[in-house]
Length: 61
View 1 (spheres, helix red, strand yellow):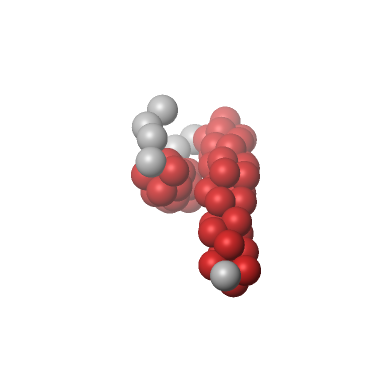
View 2 (view 1 turned 60 degrees about the vertical axis):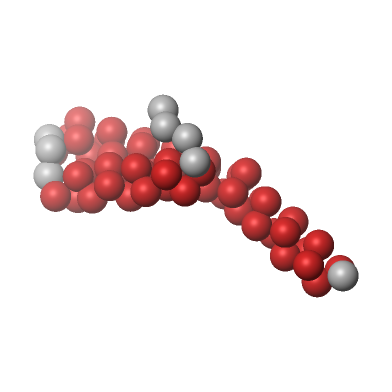
């Protein structure tokens, strides 16, 4: 029983805390790179990764 409870708690922590923090971090890095160098393959990749994280969270912003 504790194994299932622990697994759900870990998944909740990942979805509730880690995913939004990584989403925010990717956005900041993308903004800084875009301000310095303009639009590039790296900034488009960061945007794609961010949209994937948002779909993982289950809501659009």
